[in-house]
Amino acid sequence: MKHGKKYTDAAKTVDRAKLYESDEALELVCKNAKAKFDETVELHVRLGVDSRHADQQVRGAVVLPHGTGKDVRVVVIAKGDAVKAAEEAGAMLVGEQDLVDRIQKEGFVDFDVLITTPDMMGLVGRLGKVLGPRGLMPNPKAGTVTPDVGKAVAEAKAGKIEYRLDKSNIIHVPIGKASFGSEKLGDNLATVMDAIVKAKPAAAKGQYIKSATVASTMGPGVRLSSAKYVAQPGA
Image (cartoon, rainbow, N blue to C red; front, top):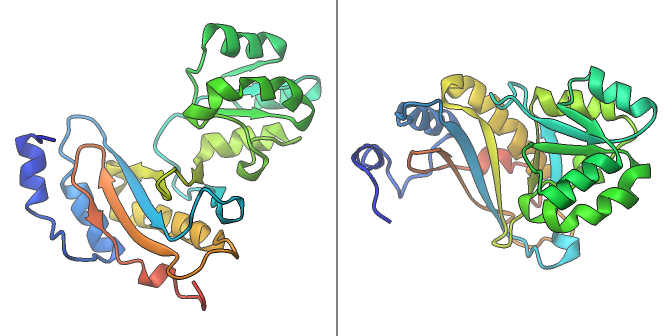
């Protein structure tokens, strides 16, 4: 893949053989985020697990202390009192069968998070083929299937992110915008890494965190030293 001059120049500032401490890595990422828009900073963590096995899945959700810097579009499928709670918490759209039909028949996926109540999962379950590949399917572990939709909507809008393994055993998550600066990004990074370490499956053997990299949308990756996040025994 051919990169532009800005990327090539930025890549020259990164020592690919070095494992950077988080503050130095994030300062470098912010410095190299030179696009005309506020670039998102992402964390990529390769884990020593096998996602093909159910007992080695790593998945959960965490609220970033400084949010994601993004206006999160939340839709809710619910009925009764939950509708009002979702609307008051700032949901972009709330519906029942009408919203299910819109997603299923019209392919409406112009949102970031879908939250529902347990009693609606019979309806929402039909949306797996549309929502699953996009990572939008509600899940109790991520807190997106819950009786307390008001709280879930508020948390999602405040910067709650879901993390999960992809088929390559890598977790990709946003930790904020380049404009946050290294300190706020560092707080968000530490929160995510702590959650991932605590989510280590009992079936995972050997080295758990294989590698961790941070990068902005248009910038080169900077490899992280994960030693300080994996301080507990057996991790």
